[in-house]
Image 1 (cartoon, rainbow, N blue to C red):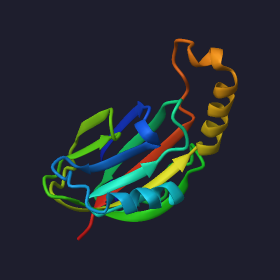
Image 2 (cartoon, rainbow, N blue to C red):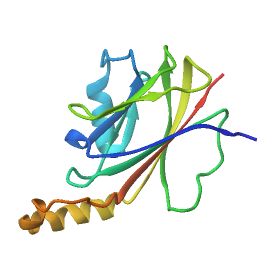
Image 3 (cartoon, rainbow, N blue to C red):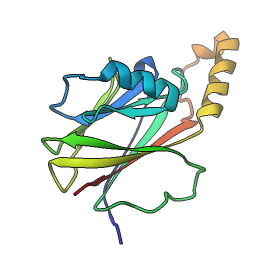
Length: 165
């Protein structure tokens, strides 16, 4: 039975409605343009060296949870109705991953216990339409845009990784 070896949860506002997951040393961007175009259409896409996820809006924070498993996990917990995308393959030559936005936040320390290798990644999402609708309401009431305080994470992503053989 698969077991969860690592979990990390962050909340942030991805620049350009996009976040990525890649090996800390993989930054060549080969195939990035095509992958971003695919992610815009399908939510997520991968070059083999970098996973791209297109979020629904840019005014509210999104919650991203990364789970690393020792083998392919079963279905995610049913605390939310998760919408799955495809399963992708990601090369990690160093065994150290970083989650980041193109011109902003970066979260490292995502180190799979199994080290360097190829990982399968399942991307699940929840609340994209609700977040888009909340963004539209904020844009209609511009006074609320400048209000200080926390905004809710209506849009959530679950990235589940496991080593491939």
